[in-house]
Amino acid sequence: MLRAFSTAATGMAAQQMMVDTISNNLANINTTGFKRSQINFQDLLYIKMQESGTEVASGIIAPTGLEIGSGVRAASNVKIFTAGELENTGNNLDIAISGEGFLQVVMPNGELRYTRDGTLQTNANGELVTSHGYAVEPSISGLSDAVSITIQKDGGVNITDASGSQSVVGNIQLARFPNPAGLSSEGDNLFKESIASGSPITGTPGENGFGSIQSGFLEKSNVQMVTELVNLITAQRAYEINSRAISAGDDMLKTANNLGN
Image (cartoon, rainbow, N blue to C red):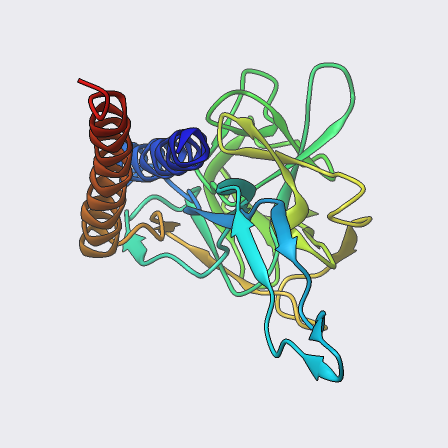
């Protein structure tokens, strides 16, 4: 009977983790470039009270065994990189990636991070940076004297100066990974390369399978409110039924304890 308590407790803990994941998805429903997480579960060790195929009598083999499971655990938390809806902002420095790929940004310590958040700006030095001030890689500068800035589908950054002259000051490159679900979430809409993700492959937007750049648009999160609310109800009911299993076990123990009274 005590085994039922620990088994149901693992179920409650697993559903609590699912609710935590859903809560984070819903909290970021309006976060630019956010990718929803999906939690995967695995069953735990089985206690084999009788192996299948055991000889129960001379020449007679049991067709099945007797196994009692120990519960469930969270196995992984996977980012789902389906495309989010594109929102027209009218700002030429806002970009969305239509297809595969990540923007590359340089952290203060020189390390690279990757993002789908295309909210770009220019800093005091005329460099193209993210909304947090991280410089885009490869570096794009010379924007201080620009009257207007245009970003092409292939990542080319064109400027027009006060005299009306036009020039290309740089090109945005994208990176993609063999296993983007293996990227490590860093917060601030940033991802970090990991052993599981594989090494980044860089290229020009719109070529060799990379997505193209859509200037004047931002990619919204791919969180679907209806889907998350349905998952939330499912997790809540699963948590409730596991708690009832503990209550049922407690009632059965109480009955057994009262047999001698």
